[in-house]
Image (cartoon, rainbow, N blue to C red; front, side, top):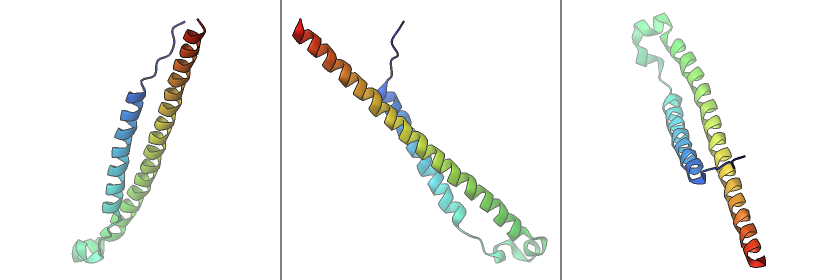
Length: 104
């Protein structure tokens, strides 16, 4: 049976990419968090209920962005943890081989 190979550098690169996406989600959250005054929609917009509709959409988007931020950050952390685990296994395997070589 072939051994499983894990490219730790790839895991860390992917985690960095997820960090960038997390930053993008945070930036979008800041933008969505800026509230528009009802006056921004004009008299017609106010009479049609546009400010309330906009606020409902912004609130929903804000919730989705917060969830995305949490998921992306958690995935990045899990990848780093996996990279640390597999990096440690490589170190353990190298020490085992060194000990075996010393015994021979």
